[in-house]
Each structure stands twice: as structure tokens, then as C-alpha cells.
Length: 145
Image (tube, rainbow, N blue to C red; front, side, top):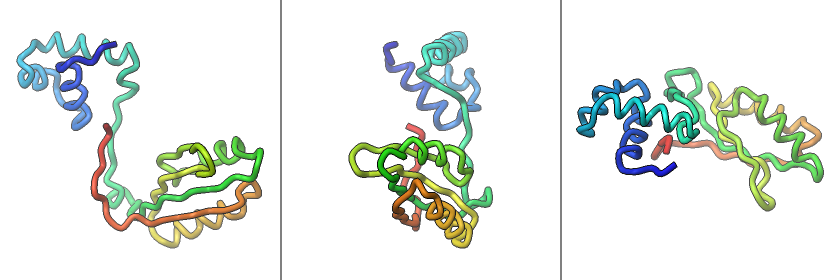
């Protein structure tokens, strides 16, 4: 599916506010509300838009500490670590990386004590041979796109 100017603008507007009324989008783009509705439906149908979601403010939702953690799996146990990571509620994003980069996770927790408990839990996993962690000091940019 080709993403022309109007499709890109619709995506941009919905990325900033998924609850924005189609009428407002249509008015800003100088098209009909029906056009916006049809285009959004097509974007969903073609899986360009996978889902509509919301973004929480971590500090206001009880998760004021953000850390980036890399887990290094033992040889031949990568899948085991990947499955473990998918089940951890503290992990908000995770990626299996190429090369010797391990499994990278964005972790959000209540406080440093909670982060320490999370890291200890990972250290006790036999499939993990090493961890690296960095605590985010301040957010510089957050975007869905």
C-alpha cells in the first residue's frame, strides 16, 4: 500500500492522539470525514496500522525508573531467554539483537529497589550468563514513529 501525503498526515495525527475525531482530521486536511474514515479502515486492513493504543506517563503510573538491560544468553539457550523476557511484566520493550548483543530490554519499575529485585531475578536464571544495565536519567524524546 502506498502511503501518500494524506495517509502520512492521518497516521501522524492519530499517532499524536489516537482519539482525535475524524471530523477534525478531515477539516485540517481539507477532505471529507468519509475520506478519512475510508483511509483509516484501509490502513488497518492493510496492517499499516496494527493497533490503536495509549501511552502512559511512567512516573504517574507508578513506574518512575526506566532502565535498559541487556541479557546475554548461554549458547543454544537464546529462545529460552526470549520466552522468559516476554513474560516479565517489568519489560515494556524487548529485542533479540544480531551479533553478540544479547537480548535488549526497556524496563520500567517503581523504584531502584524494584530494579535491583528484577536484576537479581534475571541473574538467577541459568540460561543467562551475564547482564548489563543502564538507568535512564531523563527522557530526551519519545515517539511512536
